[in-house]
Length: 253
Image (tube, rainbow, N blue to C red):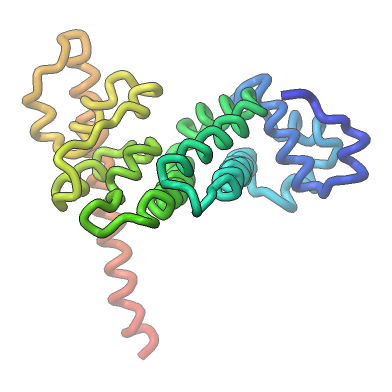
């Protein structure tokens, strides 16, 4: 991604836009983890005060960048649709336009694609939101001339855009009878042992009796202890919240 001209940005763009562009440049060069707010404001030519007027922290800035870049790509998809053509031709044209759009900024694409997986629950929620929007677009396009019996299902659309990345989501789809099988590949890019980790989260008891590679046995036991602690903390927090709510009417009275 070419480095934007700072003087042109200063006169033509608002501070938040300049900060987003700067984050895209710096994170593309150094990675998000190594990028600091100081790096971003230096690249954007604005103050730290200005940064914190727009974003609570670096991660929040990145999530806005991810949403905006995804929305821009989706606009390209929508504008490429030609309703008078068969859905196959529409989809082919839309995907051609979409990939051409992505190819215009390969460094930014790589940054967004990789770094979103390192932002924990907040990153997962935003990515899920974006992927669902993309899946909805696919269903609207494919199902425009289809009857209910042959319509593209939500589960299939979500799978097609790579939006099924969580064990709970896959389980709910299968349990509801919306699909017989969910293929999950993307999470393994960041965690080759994702299947084992997901199984442990879903059922620690079953995971304890699953045959793991010998070299991972101690790690499995530690992970199961951590999961148990997390569940205890969550249960205590839920109890405290329930107690607080039950006391509120008494205090008001």
